[in-house]
Image (cartoon, rainbow, N blue to C red; front, side):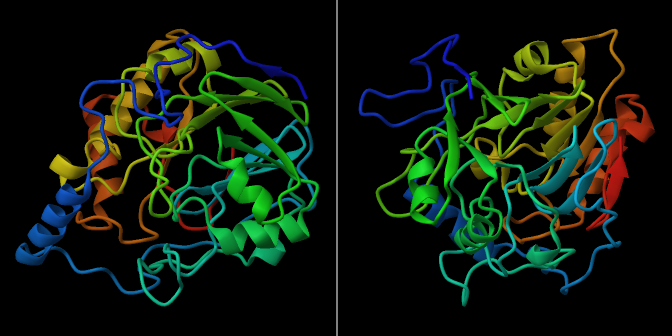
Length: 337
């Protein structure tokens, strides 16, 4: 598979010690003291209770087995940042997360409010798996190991230096990309796009692996998976270089308190602005469908868990955007596009 190693600013997000950083002002991730402050404030401030398990709307996924025909395309939201894309005759899965808890162990840590819509064994044969970064709610070791065993021919596309984890868990076919690098994977062009986030999985490995989104082009369709990101100034450039998009997968949840989370995750208003920037790059092209992701599955932050869709819809209407282009999916919902 060919890889284009041309970078616009090869050192902007690299540090001299071999780590990575966000290249924009006020982008350092919160440190240990900030975490302690957030925990202290959360104990002193009343917050909306975590809703009971199964609180959000669900539906049965409508997945084509084993593959959809090359002329059709569909997306199925599995919850959080996990989406099954069936496009161009390929089955593509993003940030696969099937564990009960988003934590190193399964007896403590954030627990699912919504279970996966289907068991892993009901997935169609996977061709490509996109992984955005190393955090536990996106890179889930048990899920990776199961997929590596049961879908051994799938190609995993990941940001720089994340491959070390995956190889140790049984992944065989692996492509690592830096920001703006492009690879041909199973006939799909995949470009790693900038994101404002950070990586950490264990003590001492903060920012040793990169984080990114992915712009994909296959069979005349273009998709952008944002991964995990706070607001940053590169959304228009992503639209210019990767678009015009037909479908964009944009996080809308896990954003409060803002003093802590503004450098980690977008809030719904920022997500809508990111969408507008993507569209502005190609003003005469039809606007893409936006699926709001990264909400409703795990209680990670302090906002009410049902708030992200409400705020996203409100901002969408305020901006005069076409109602049918915002997709707030039910868990397990499939849509052709």
